[in-house]
Image (cartoon, rainbow, N blue to C red; front, side, top):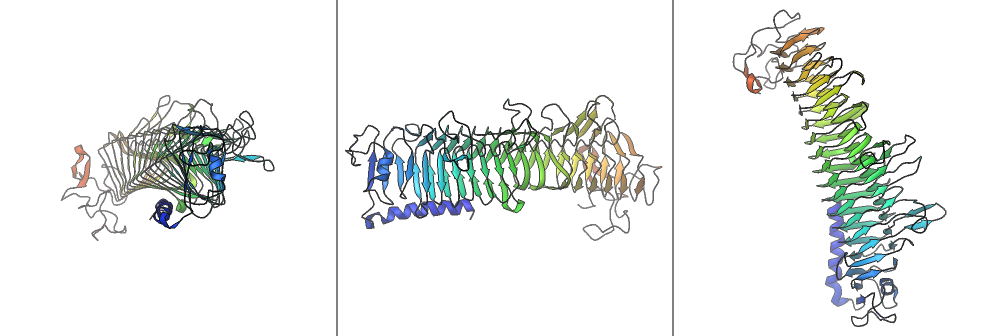
Length: 595
């Protein structure tokens, strides 16, 4: 059972348990509130209290009581002193609690027993709980510490952590919600909308547990300071905090960058080192780290959708959609550390890693497509993904397609690719951006991949290299239909072991080749390659163990590069190479006979 499921089970079990025990608890009562009620109301249905706080604080109210609130705008702040259930009768559109920027709209502290439940309200215009010594305000809409709390069908909107009234400076964290030490907070079908803070514009989780099922985090802003830019436009998780989100939309949030070159982090979501979390079936869309897409200029930022420094064992995205986010410096979709499973990362923008900027990251069974490296017209690396030297990025069974970079690594820059399909990616330059190469991948390690239809162009000098791969290593990989306007349509300056390179605009350039098939490329099957051995290559190619007969592909016109019976490549590889899966001597090419 996931942490979210366990938390939901606890909350719902506690609430259900209270209901079952009702006949046995004589102290459990229902009180009524109406903003049109008389000042002397006693909380009965006929004579309701005029304010919610009056009902909470009344001498007759005890833990586990229920307060029912009639429609109206309640201009007050709530401080819970019991574990209660507070329910509106007409929902959040008609039942509003407005704090007038005079503190947190709702504060729940030290209620660690049965959970408090708040259902069907709008919490708005809170300024947070201000600490003058620390100079920060926490939790504009909701402040929760050392308490168990469930919010159902609520809206937390238009709050801001300020030092005083509505025009006072913006300070602190958790514009909408602050889940502090030992908080145990669950949101069901709630909306956190248009809240502002320096950090954690929508939500800040600080050594607490925050779970959310359904609902939205939208248009929240972490505006930071001049020298300490925003972190976590939608949600920020500090060390010791944990989040569990299921089917949540995280949309159009902003972590604002700095004009002094310091990076904003996590337009939608930021996890700091020591935090943890799981996202399942969530959508992160149109968030921005830096501010470019939202009109704030070309400011620094990483992780438009997500930025995480949580250990990869502690942070997972499962079956999520990461769409159309912006990270001005890099990681338009995702930046940092974590594990991503079965997710789509598409249409994102970031200078270094349009889709993903990996520090220590694993992606399995993901689709990475239509991402763009360039944000403001400058050079970039890695339209789909970027893994800098010394960093870790592993992509397994992923589709990496139709990504763009200027000028290197259309599909990916660096990283390890296992059983991936890498196709239709594009790296280009105009003569001013330095060396152009790696339409598919620049400097990566490919194992068991299909690489096709990638392209690299230098429109000015026409010397781009490595349409499929530049400067990397490939094992058991098939290259076909790739293009470079300079040299090496299949690959350039790479090492190929047991690969098949066929029907590319140009074959190989300055590559090391072993146990491979390089045939039927339009120009130069093998060009300036220093070592070619035990491979099927055109006649006249020097090297030990090379052969030159037709490899007898199953159907090259249909890009089926399996070997037919009788192919001269069967059992013709280097006798010292590891055997094929059937135990026989190595075949030449990427697909062993019978594979």
